[in-house]
Amino acid sequence: MEHTMKIKSILIAALVLGTPVASDTDHQPYKGLETRDISSFSQEDLEALQSGSGWGLALPAELNGYPGPAHVLELSEELGLSDQQLADVQAIFDAMKIDAIATGNDLIEAEQKLDQSFRSNSLTANALNDLIANAETARAKLRFIHLSRHLETKELLTAEQISGYSALRGYSSDPCQSVPKGHDTEMWRRHNGCSD
Image (cartoon, rainbow, N blue to C red):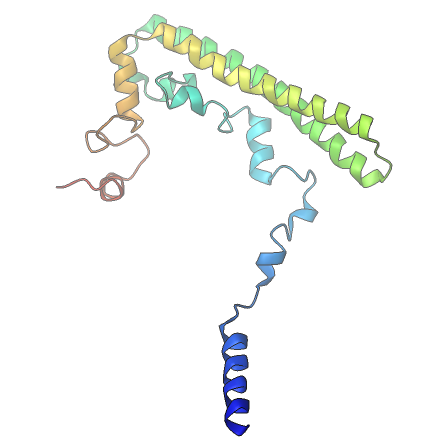
């Protein structure tokens, strides 16, 4: 009997000590987000939308051989852009920026209305559907603005410039061939396993 009690005590202790204790972050992954003005957006998201930056919306173009106007302008010397190419890419970028800022603000406003409607505690399913549709329409329009400018930019560049862009941005098949502008050379080479 005493032996059985010892075994039970050991088993219970093992179960208790072996069971991981849940941390606050396991149950509270959104802790602190309740203070956001707009639940769906961080401060960085808001700044990106208000400034017309890409916000990652153009990655399907960027990573598949369709250079973006902002980065083409940054790399204009390395790419050997002609004066005409430079002027044309600048025009694409300027128009994109104007449209992206306006539409980014539309998206912010739509998400803000969605938040406010939930806070009002009087939201209906029909109203919710309309609010979501408005927000997603703005998001789709913003994505089109960014992606379509990549299409336009590619049309202005030579195959050699497009290839050079990919290499300079670090998308070439061998990342050790060139280090993208703005990256620390030593760190880039180390992270990509480049030999000296």
